[in-house]
Length: 158
Image 1 (cartoon, helix red, strand yellow):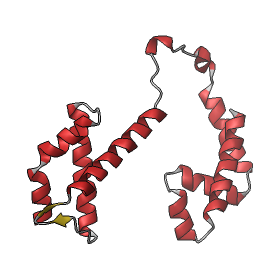
Image 2 (image 1 turned 90 degrees about the horizontal axis):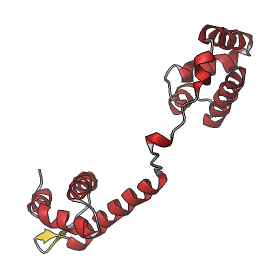
Image 3 (image 1 turned 90 degrees about the vertical axis):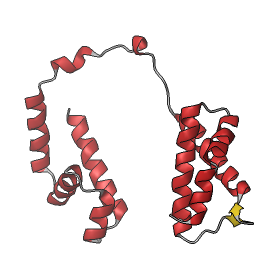
């Protein structure tokens, strides 16, 4: 562990207090500080120098913590909390004949163009589109569109 990280760890309570001043509770503050350590360590490995007069650049750490806090708040805005009592359960799934639906899907796949079928099977099997694109040297968007076309076609069957 390098000297800069040791200097950072010595001021752990200071960093936590700063994040708490943004309006976070203790647990969230500690989580953000831990994220800051990871981010700073990665940047130090890439050559970042945050030393300032035998101490850590306080302003840089403050801005890093502030940015991580803002990122967390942006993510929280996208999350919708739903009360479980307000959820109505759809009973229509109980009437689905899964064997019949599976047969429809396999029949449609077997009748599809071989390229479309193979792309769908590979990606549906766990290979990412980006990986397949790199390995096969086929354009990413071509694979993406083919996969989505097949997926949507099969969804309509069910």
